[in-house]
Length: 173
Image (tube, rainbow, N blue to C red; front, side, top):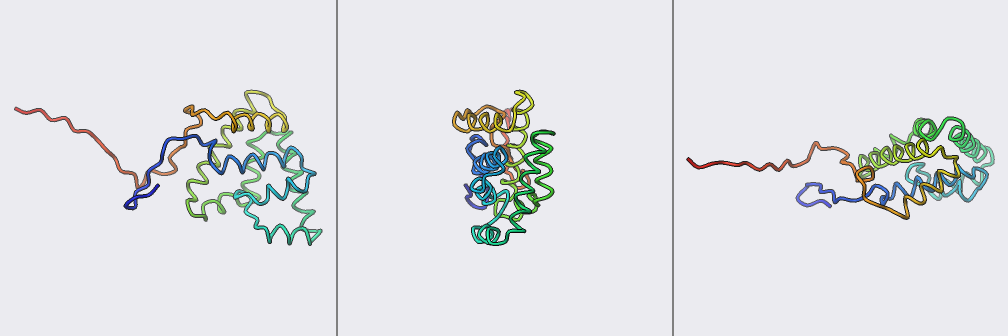
């Protein structure tokens, strides 16, 4: 919350953030790239940035829709063959994720959560040798069984406007 222009972050888990739900929706679409409903849900996330009007326009334009479907099949293939982080970096570049997120209100917060969640998902995939479907199940379990471990603790996006509080001990004499 903000008071007197100062930002205060309450402790919590990044897994409780809207970005975590968005990444779950995207993972679901990548695990089933032939599903139009899941694809449209993924496109409507803050990460992909498509409005309802954009999605309706895509559905009316077969060539554009085929291009988007092809991209998601490519991301799904990269996820299966090269892993989550390679896919996430490819998606960030091809879909202008960084520019989109940073252009939003609280853009640094969105970007920090996105990168933090990508790191958590990547680590889960690597440690557990998960397929796309396995990764979806693993991440779903993390979202429903949230525990505030240090790994999941919300990270400060920037400390440039932070207030530093220090205690000064002074002795008399």
